Length: 460
Image 1: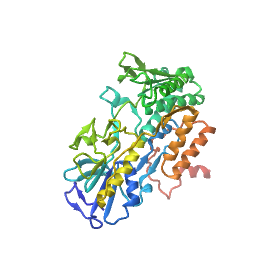
Image 2: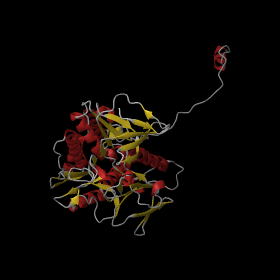
Image 3: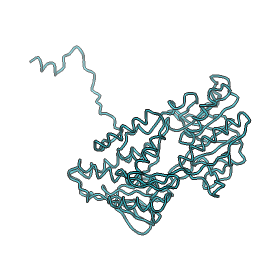
Image 4: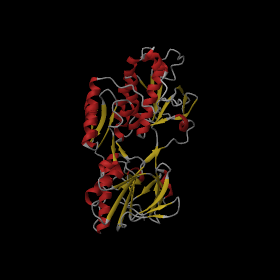
C-alpha cells in the first residue's frame, strides 16, 4: 500500500507492506486514465517493486457516448457502467476525491469515506486524467435550474425530469401545459444533438400512454451559436442532421445563445424568449479546476505537454485527455479532447511510464482522427469515417456497431445488445428512478400476553 498521512490526527498510518520502490498514481478513471491503468496492469502491475494506484470519484467507468440513451430510456442505467475493480485485478483502486496536487513535493491529497477524511499519497510518477467539468459561463439561472449531461446522475435526473413533466401535464388539474411540455437543449455539438434527438423520440413515443396529451402540445427546441449544427463534422452532414430533425418537429434557434434562465423562461441573446421549465445545458466544458493550481504553462486551462505527453518542465508527470494541450505538429493545432484521442494517449503514456521505469526510449504521440459519429434518432445518424461521409441508416448502424465494440467487457456488450433488441419490439419504459424511502410507522410495542383486537374479532 502507499504511504498515507492522516490529516485528521496528524499521524502517519502504518503501511501494510514495505513501501515499493516506484509508486505510480493515476488521477481519473475516464477513457484516458483507465486506459493507462489497464495497459500498466498488463505489463507492470505484477512487478513487486511497482505499485500502481488509480483514484477516481466514482467506483466505475462511464461509457459517455451512450449516456443520452440512458436519459431517454433506450438503455438501462447499469449497462453503460463498468465497475473499476472488475476491470483492474492488480492495480489498486481508491474511490475518492482529489483535493490537492503538489507537483514539487510529489504528493496528492485525497479525501474519501463517509466523513471525507483526508490522506496524502506520495508518488514517483503521476498521470493527470481528471477530465473536464461543465462550464456554465456565469449565465444567470443555469446553476440553479438547468440540467446537464455529463454524468450518470445527470442522465437519471433528465429521465426523471421528462417523465415527471409528462405526468404533471397529463393530470386533470394542470392548467398551463406549455412550459411543462417545452424542452430546450442548448448546444449544437454531438452531446446536444444526440440529447435533443433522444428527447424528441422519447416524449413523442410516450404520448400514447398519456390520454390528455397530444403532439401539438409538445415543443422541442435546440439553441446553437453557429449557423449549422454539428460543426465538428462536414457542413453537409450538419445540414442533413438539421433537416432530419426539423422534419421530426424539432425547432432550431441558430446564431444565438442562452442569455438567462429564470421564472420558467429561457431568454436568448437575440431577444427571443421561450417559456419552458426545462433547459438542458450541453454548450460548454472546461478542464478540471484542480489544474489551475499546477504551476506550468496552460492553454485555456489545459496543461502544455511535450510530444511524449509529459507536462513541460515537469519530468515524471503526464497529462492527457481533457487535461492536456498536446500540439499536433502536422497541423499546428492542439489535438481535440475526444475519447479516441484520450485512449491512444493513454496507451502512449503507459508505454512512456514503463520506459521511465526501465530507462528505455520513450514514444511520441502521433494520431489522426479516424472518424466521428452522431446518432440523431429513429435509426438515422451521421458519420465521417476516414474522410468518407455517411448518413441515414448506414451511419446509425455504424454508430451502434463501433461504439458497441468499444464498450468494455463482454457482459456489458451483451446487455446493451439485448436492450437494443428489446427496443425494436417494445415501447420505451416510463419508470422514474426516485430515491424515496418507504413509509414507516412507530407504534408502541404490544404486550404479547394480550390478544390483539384482530384476534378478538376473529374469535367472536
